[in-house]
Image 1 (tube, chains in turn yellow, brown):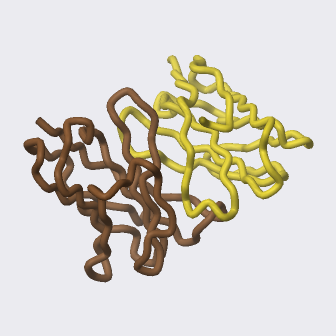
Image 2: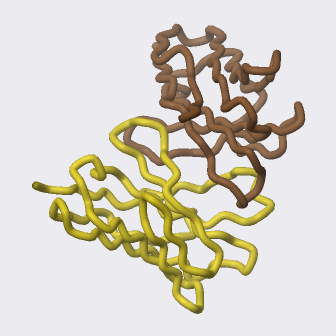
Image 3: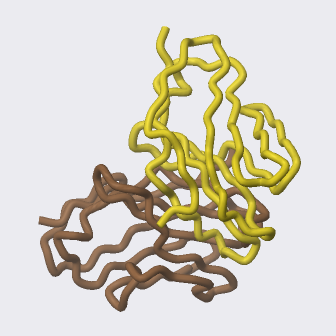
Length: 111
Length: 115
C-alpha cells in the first residue's frame, strides 16, 4: 500500500497558485518526498523532491513540515497544461528507483 | 532536452506470444527501470537494472519477464508468453543515480494489447 495520502481531486483557476497537500505520517528518516505528475496517459514526469528542507525549482515549490509528516506542492501560477494527476511518493535512499505510486490527486486547471 | 524513447508505441499480440519492448535510455544514465500501468489503475514498479544486473524486482516480475541491455544503448523488456492480464502501458525510465537521490526520467510508454 502507498505510504502517502492525497485528496483524489482538486480544481484550480488558471493563473492562481495550486497547493497540493500530501500526508506521509509514517515517513522514515531515510525517505525522501518525491512529486511526479502524469498528463493524460503519458509517462510520469518528475517535478521535485526533498528530504526535510523546502525546495524550489522552475516548476514548483515543495514545503515539508518540520516533523516531515506532511508536505505541500505549490504550483505558483497554474496553466491549463498543468492539468494532470499529481503523485506524492516517499522513497528510501536504498530504493533502487522503486517508486510506489498511489492514486494521486487529479488536478484540473480551469480557464 | 534528452529523453527516454520507447518502441513500439503500440503493440497488439495474441495470448501466448513473446513480446519485446524496447527502450533507449538517456545516454549518460546508469540505472534503468520498467514500470507498467494497467488501464485505469496505478503505475506499478516492475524492475530496476544496474551494472547489467537486476537490482530489485516486484512480485509482478515473475519468470515470464526478463530484461536485457543487449548493447550500449538499448534496454529491453521481454514477456515470454503473454497473458490477457499483461495488457497495459509499459513505461521505461532511467536515472543518473540510483536510490532516492535522483529523478527518474520516463519514456512515453509502449501500449501492449494482448488478445
